Length: 399
Image (cartoon, rainbow, N blue to C red):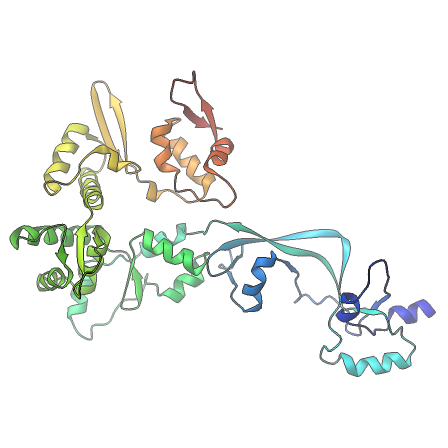
């Protein structure tokens, strides 16, 4: 009877536990509101994340069908439940709402003044592990409605209603994509996405090709140097050619590098590699399949401005070549189109080719970013290395 009375009374709060000295003990008792409390979940965190939690700078992101992730401003963490066979007692603070009023009643019933009040037994806790951001969905969403010539025409008609289907604002992307804000911004930049009229868009490849060709045409017509393009002049002329100024500026930022501003006027230099890769993609897109190497090089060099590089080395991660008889064939195979998850990436690569030389494989895996795992570690996990001798290049097959 005395034990039952003790178990059902409560006195102390979390302070009595925190103040417990080494090698000492403390009685525990049921809190008056002891119960399931399914709204309480324990989360185990690294100490360096505490400031973000206490200052409300962490977010749980994901759709109902997704595995939830926790995001800070710069990193993404997987969240998983870890059960425990030990009893984890949760003791609320003594100043919890409603607790003080009940303490007096329980003291009169003979409760132990030094007991701690347990409000819940936790079966386990949530743990977090840093992971790569899940950005594959981002390209899929933005590809639904790329910005093209029809959108530019709509801008010229004042008051024309916009079909917002397949369009996403920043807040929409935050809700859909499981990544931190910084990782999401980086993902948008890697896709060459831009914000216009409040929506994040990809520029249609054909429309982008039109703008770049017009820019290069104007360089010849107006005797502009490709290494020092006056931003205001370039955008003004492209705008008079019918391209929205913001879209023209985006094209300039994709294919150019902003020079150090010596005065008030910003200048740009066209990036040889980015321009050359663009026209290589254009040639292969028009071919819709394999091309003979000789024909590809001929068409590529005719499209690229004189003086810009057209060596195959700059197309690493863009093309695959294959020798059939005496002919060498080339086709598009872009690293940027591959999934970011390592298992899915290697699965696709080995479906494409059962054996990879290192020089061919490396461009397709060098961008894999798995926290805590090196590129060598990924190769050990997903591939078998075959090397006849130390003088030969290694060959990789699926594990």
